Amino acid sequence: MIAARIARLFLRFPMRQMEDAHAEQVIAAYTSDLSSFPLWAVDAAILSLLREPRAFPPSSPEVRARTEKTVAWAHFESRDIARVLKADVSPPPDPAARERTNRLIEEVVAELKRKNTQRMPRHG
Image 1 (tube, rainbow, N blue to C red):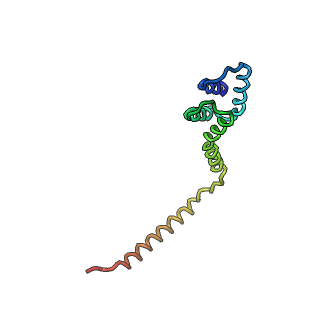
Image 2: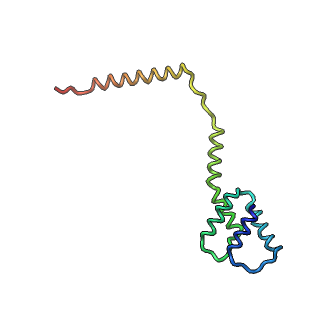
Image 3: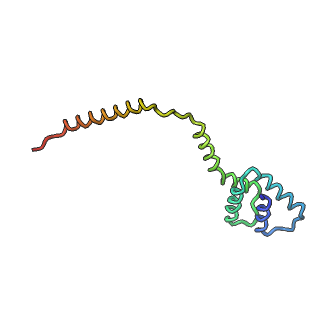
């Protein structure tokens, strides 16, 4: 799959005649350099490189660097997702603790309302 993409990449550039065996070696080298990446990333990197004005096909290190840049966000997101999935989870509070907390909140709100009405100036 990657080999076909590299072959199409090379077809976009005028090149000197190359023996089939040499062309296969060049494509195999690119394919080897890119084999650890998903195809969507290779496609995006090649498309990005083709949008730039150039007289010669990009080198294998150029394609690899652009592919790495293309998937960088996915690696960061994957790392963040793994952190979330491995994070310690606090158990939910038991119903009695929740009720105590709600009661305390209600008491604080009532006290604040009481104090607020005592401080309000009287007009009249």
